Length: 321
Image (cartoon, rainbow, N blue to C red; front, side, top):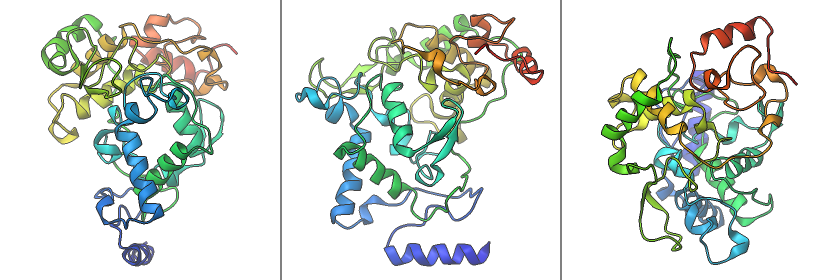
């Protein structure tokens, strides 16, 4: 492994880019420095991809002047859920993403490409429509993701990918308790009514300083963040604004409860979610849409407790086809 690491270091030095990670399970990785990229065609495309992901609303949002570019259905940005432009540990980082695809995805029960993963976010978190594969926007996003994986071996798994994996509660997550957590910890930025804080006014395509967490301009119910377990891990490691997973202020219970409260609120509905996870054994126990595991209510799937559902799954009891 040390020999492989030296080879990768040599290759990275030859490009003038920072080595991001060297081996499977790498702990001390960091995103490469985009400022060191030359101003050539590749560098320009990478920077355009970063701009698209940081200011999605400005380039392909529902308020842009060119109606043909309105691919996103809300005024969020990709970085609303991928912190520090996709470079933060346990903040849904993109570092290493490019070299992890193609990969098997349980939601589709198929091997998916990076492009398909991006379009999954477009249709769910961004509540919009797919980017054409040949579009300049797709090429720019792919270029940025490629750049962020500089120096990472294909298939490497980096510590801090995704979000914190919290141990499921023995009880149900409580939206009522979560409402109080939200009021004291979240409302100052995201608003008492969850509608966020805009930079300007409706129609100016300038997005939000702090994004809405429910309502018509938020993610839809097919997004990963609509699952309480995933939202809780994200919240614990990244919220309120200014903390990281090393300086978390919420307890696990508070993170679950506030995630339950946020996801109990109205939001856009994605059609045909029953087609997700066609191999039903892959369906997460907290996926709060039909079909459900027999013997358990929609509410228990959404808020828990999830242990009994997991035990039923272990016995081969899955949602109906």
